[in-house]
Image 1 (tube, rainbow, N blue to C red):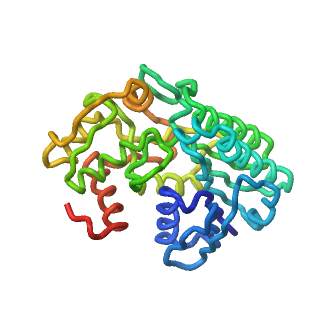
Image 2 (tube, rainbow, N blue to C red; image 1 turned 120 degrees about the vertical axis):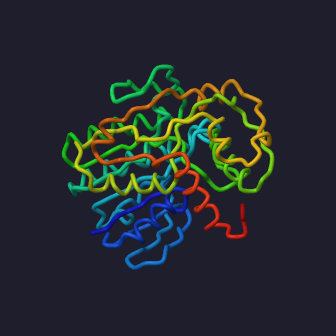
Image 3 (cartoon, one colour; image 1 turned 90 degrees about the vertical axis):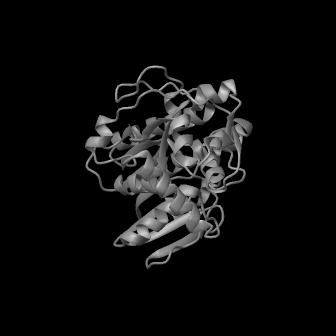
Length: 309
């Protein structure tokens, strides 16, 4: 029994690995990324450096694997800048994994980290009936694999589920390839008590989820009782930037706004969100904005203990 986690060196991947270590009882957990991922304290973990851009040797990576959490992806901003490379990672790689599993006839639970980017820019409230209309290349890539996942599930070779994740906070500072990186930077600026200028307005509305809650939902997807091949929008908090700033900053005046029309359209105009199917299946958002902030600050401070608010 082997669980494979791709993209395990990444921000969410590390949270998933730590959660799996805390839980235990997952058999062998194989962590993979382009460079060998760190292994958390605990038994049963192995790390493998593997470039998913090279799909010729998937047999070695997938040996004995019966469960997969697929996180590896080129993020939105980087996808627009390097579309050919992004296609190899975002589309060709997961498709090759699904095809391999189909050919060998090995039943496998495939948890796919999709994205709310597949929904596009929507002015009306979002629910289970909302039709995906991607407005970015990244969103289109994610939607392509959602469709592929449903077809391989129909063939019976994969017990798949796609989970559309919202903005996840707070990613480490530094280049990330994410056009929405300002959401994470806001938390770092608050911890460091430094001013910041946001590319969206104070009344911009967003969907957010802490990294720890995102990891919990992805692990929950391994064993939840739900129709194979379905993709669900993950529950998330729907808040305004002003609400977030008021909770984060001792002095909210440290935050200024210089809205970028495109970023405002893509990341600052998210309507009300209801997720009845995901909620019924046991997926959940952070309990409150206060709980999300506490979780995010705990994660940041664990990585950099010298930071004291």
